[in-house]
Length: 249
Image 1 (cartoon, rainbow, N blue to C red):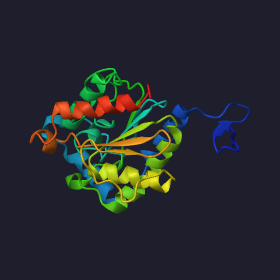
Image 2: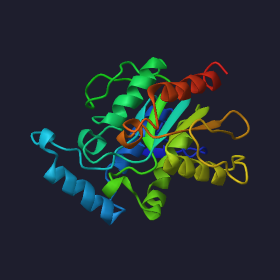
Image 3: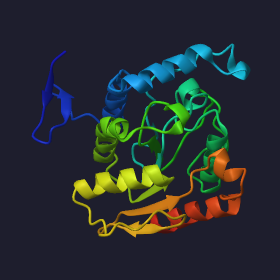
């Protein structure tokens, strides 16, 4: 089968229309899951897949980079830190199979962009409507602490998602690492990021000119939720604000 690339850079089969955003995201994700750019992360994700947690000893772990998940026509982009070793690294879907995901998808369901309030496995029927969930780093890092070089190695995938998710109006960054990362990417892409950059704080909003706003939130990790640094009402307010800025704006 022959492919051609049009003036806009989009690939299509000869004689056909350019690929849809969904098809191009699928193509991107095929390339992403084969990535082995970061030796430390490759070794860690694969070790976790062999060792496993006792509760999941009978399960086959994904053990690869985790692609983004959601609606190709999304107005809302959710950016997390990285897959959890026994969460997304096990299930193969962002924020799936761990406590952080329980918080996130429950909140997205309340905000009417998730079809159900839980996310347990890739085949559990969950659908997102108007939202797309991704992360700054795509492989589970030791101690949930990726290095800046690993973040930079993953940057291409986040940038390509931004290219393909052309309708995004609101970005919610979960945690300081994601917040700093997405603002750096958007600044380098020509968005009007304020100087100095607003420091990370829960509920901080950064309008970027035009129709794009970044909202910062504490990450729904157990470190934050168990200590009550992040409560459910605090988290719900983030998504209500996103809805105010998003599809009806």
